[in-house]
Amino acid sequence: MTPPRILVVDDDVAMRQMLELLLKEQGYDVASVGDGAALLAALEGGCPDLVLLDVMMPQLDGFETLERMKADDRWAEVPVLMVSSLPAEDATVRTLGLGAADYIRKPFRVRELLARVQAQLRARAELGRAREALARRELELLRAQEDADSRRALVDILHEVTGGLSSEEIYHILARRVARALNTSHCSVVLARPGAQFGTVATAYEHPSVVNHRIVLAKYPEIRRALATAKPVLVEDVMTDPLYAEERTRWAHEGLDVRIRSVIALPFSIDEARAGVFFLRRTREEPSLNRADVEFADTVIKAAVSAIQRALVIEHTKADNARLEELARTDPLTGLVNRRVLVERLQTEVERARRYEGSVTVLMIDLDHFKRVNDQHGHLVGDEVLKQVGDLLVSAVRSVDLVSRYGGEEFVILLPETPSMGAATFAERIREKLEQFPFINAAGDRLSITASVGLAAFPGPRIETVEDLLARADEALYRAKADGRNRVRT
Image (cartoon, rainbow, N blue to C red; front, side, top):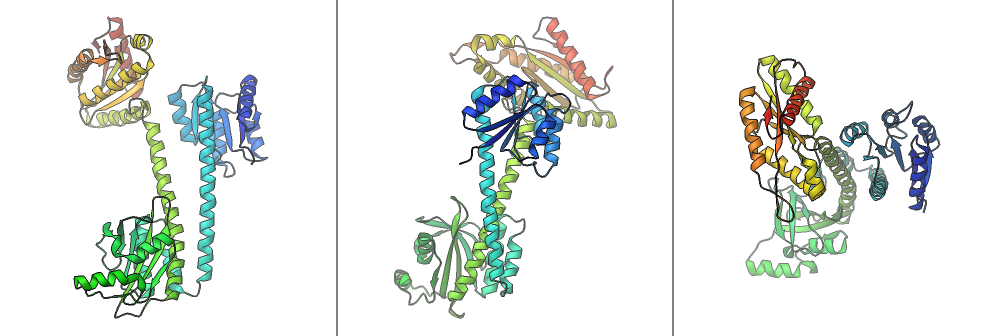
């Protein structure tokens, strides 16, 4: 098996050599170059499985190199792990925005670097397998379409279910179109696993209002057999087929007049969690279902399963993108919004205040002597304190306010439509809450935590922009520190 190929890009010769040695020891095929231009030239000779790209390089830096890579279709999907000594928050937002797969800050821990490399290579391998499977499924779909060109109904159905639909929409369309194509009065999709006691009717052509209805599978021997054997089950006459012997006894005992004449149960499997049968039935007034009907319906279902799997891949991709976007906007420790979101919201509120002659106030909060907490109690306790501070601030503000972690032990609260006087009263209340809050370490000891608060409001002297507003709040915070800490200053 060919080992994954990794390309290291760094202008520091010692760093390149160290990374090459480290990665080769893990069994990877490693090469290195000294700058972005050399990387682009190397890519012309073949795409690696992963690129480790330094940000700070002369001439063509990592940001521009990454942007050029992602703009070229040949290399756009090669995962890039950015490596830099830049502050993690700013560099992460920018690199992820340009299409990087991950970011790690220098100096890095060897185990963390190797774990991130392994994660990116694993994700690339999984994506490759998914694409190969999707290509095979699409080929199967194409063959099914070619084999069934003589049947207009099949082509119509496949065109309808292979669009950008959700799996639930595809179930509904298939039940309706297969029922019409085969002229059956009953067609439903039952979701169940082999050996299950219950199934769920996802959709039913004969009862469109029935959605996610639970049924007892003991009453459906054809569904149980189809699930157990993973093969289509055809019952041409339920009144004579041995499969229905027990059911006929039950019907007679309960005095049931069963109008169903013939049945087809077609099993399908989407993934490990989703499987079931397409359940077709005709009544006594209709001709019996036959083997040709099984072949037609089975062809449609197999093609539809490919479409459903593609729909699920799309759904999962959208969900993954949403999670990445959330990570780019959220502080991972406290769960608060980060500086990027704060600045965006501040820009909006300042423009609104300017347009409607309103006001907006910013509180910049810094925990006093927080280094002592980390030094005396450890960083785990320090992190827990920061999370509790974030929770306390969120619980104290209004729904229209915004709490952000600004960096380190600094937090910022944005107060729309709040003049300085009211904001100062609120800031004093926040300061008191922090001073009185019972922060406790793992040993049960109470920690004394206080905070200094700087306040600035728009409109105000020397404040025209968001940057001015934050700068004035920072100056006020500096005054609070200089005046002895644990106080509010404007």
